[in-house]
Length: 244
Image (tube, rainbow, N blue to C red):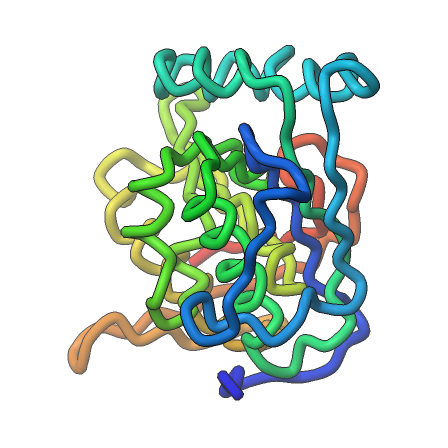
């Protein structure tokens, strides 16, 4: 088992949403030994789609804001994935989350698809499209660390910056938002958020004030406010509004 060191059961289950392009059920050849897969985690569905029956659903992955973002980051890979006639959607809320085993199993399932013909993997929660090679190098046979599975987005708002995460729902924890950050403080605040990602991934729950240690000589008091809004488009998740 891959323990989550600070896990508390708050009945807030990890939600995952991936699309694997260029494969179908025929490509799901999973090896327990090679791919480190015991099972498809309870609560997670694996759905095989094709252009003949599900064209509109598949096209939605390439349209709107999501499509614009993944196309801008890698237009060649975007076009390769869009040309595919079939894909597999891996989606749902993992029921058992006291360990990282659910994520290890899903990483292994997707690696099995990579080994059997996948041309790209889309992480809908972080708006990230991975090539097969990039996916394997970043995730397969690695320790599970939320910092690898969550992104920190930085946007300019007036004279200052807004930093916020996407992807913490994969660990059953709120995302993190920090507003009105001066440009000179962006690196510091990014480091603080990155530490919160790590501890949140390990199962920690943040309440009011927390202490973040960046080194033996650097520590910061962070104020946290839980915002219970799962319907916002910025996160598609509840989030912590934080300040120093």
